[in-house]
Amino acid sequence: MRYGLTILASCAMLAAGIHAAAADSTSIGGTFTTERGPEDFSATTGTDWQGDITHTFDNKFSISGAVKYYDTAGTTDSKTNVQVGIGYTWELGKMSLTGSIGAGQHFIHSDDDTSFPYYYLTIAGSVPIAEKWSWTMFRLRYRNAFDTSNDYDTPEVATGVTYNIDAHNNVSLFIERDWSNGAASYTGIEVGYHYKF
View (cartoon, rainbow, N blue to C red):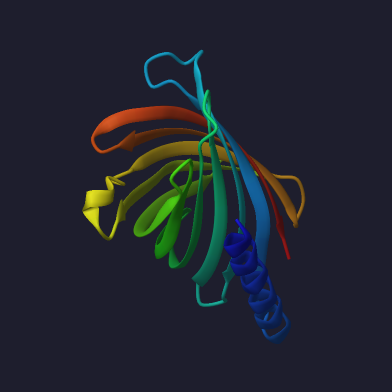
């Protein structure tokens, strides 16, 4: 976890320095996700907490960093993902299409601690639906370990809405479906908050 906090702090300092030098924007915040059983929505399989930061340049390119902690229900095991990435946003009429690519380290905290590197690709499409509301029609992720023997083929599909409280603050609610090596692993309810400056 300390490695993740170090990376996030470094990203924050870098973004602050860039922000001071140009009229770009930075978003910092986090999400909480409750994992529900893939076939039984009333069953809890885990809870996740994420802290993240994204700096977006005027040319629509972005850099990001995130730390996500996974607490598996019914066990003392947990996992942490630490990742960095780059992205780009296309404005297609009213729709914003954002793609990103990145890499990270997956830490498994158990009686036999281990970790391995992974890569990910995401694409998301959003449209405004009211003055302060936007709908992310789709948010797709493909993620896998560089060494596929680590069994980390973990795609995700999500959709959700974001409410802009004001020019700086927003809250979001997403529904997501995750798979692990071809089998459904959970349905998630994700609640988020971000501050933009």
